[in-house]
Length: 314
Image (cartoon, rainbow, N blue to C red; front, side, top):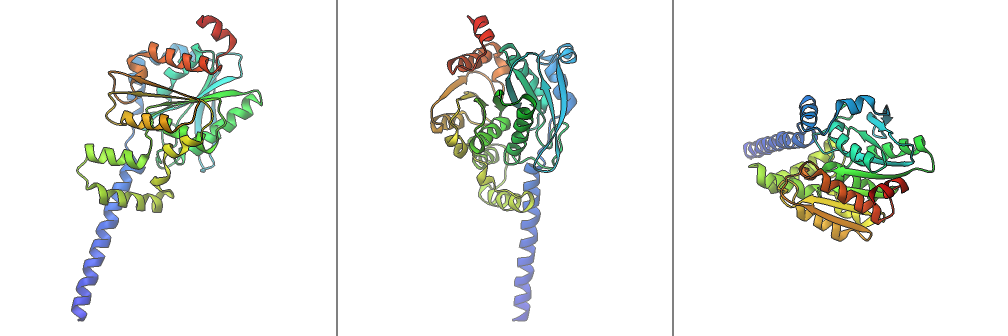
C-alpha cells in the first residue's frame, strides 16, 4: 500500500512539475512576445517615406517621461505644429514602437491636429516588464490622457487613434473612461482570449484547450490579470463618443469579423470602413490617401474638424 501511494505521489509530482514548466513556457510567449528590431522599424518607415527625418528634426516637439500608475515611466513625444487645442493621441500595435505612429501624426497634422505619440509598456523607450495586450496598457493610456489634459488645460479637445493592440487598448480605455471626443479603432481584436485561440489554431501545434487553460491560470498568477477581462467587445458597449472602425477584408491575423462585431455592439454614433487588398495593420500603408479621406469624413461628419481645416477641405 505504501509503495502504491509512493508511486501515485511520484506520478502526481511529475505531472505538477510538467504542468508548471509548460504553463511558464506558454505564458512566457505572451508576456515576453518578441518585438521587432527598433532599427529595422526605423529603416522600414524611412524607406517607405512614412517617416521623414527632416520633418522630425524640424518639428515643434517636446519629449516627455510620463509616470504610469503601474510603476514605470512612459516615453511620449508631444508634436505641436499648430496653435490649437485639438490633439490626437496615437497608440501603436504590439511589437512596434512610436516610430510606427509618426505616419498617423502627420495625417492628423494635415487635418489640423497636434498629436501625442508614445511607446507602450515594454516597447521602445518605455518601462514595464510584460505585454498585457491592453489590460495594463489602458492604464498607461489614461496617464497619457491626464498628462495632455494638464498640458493643454480645460479647453482641450482630443481623440485617440489605435492600431491593432493599440486599437484594443483605445477601446478598453474608452470603456473605462470615455473622455475623448472621438476614437479610431484600426484592426482591433474583439477579445484577446479568442484572438489567442485563433493564432494557436493557425500558427502553432499546441493543444488549444489545455494550453488556453494554462495561459489563463499562469497569466493570473504571474502577471496579475485574467485574459478573460481583456475584452474590447465588453468595453465598446459603454462608449458614447463617436468611433470609427477600420479593418482590412484580407486580414488573416485579426479577422475582420472582429471589427464587424465591435461595430455592431457599439451604440451610435459610429462609422465603419473596410479596406480591400491588404494584410493586418496595412490599411494606411496600402492606400494613405483613401485612409486619410475616411478619417477626414468621419471627423467632419461629427463636427470635429477645426474651421480652417473645414475651409481647406471645401
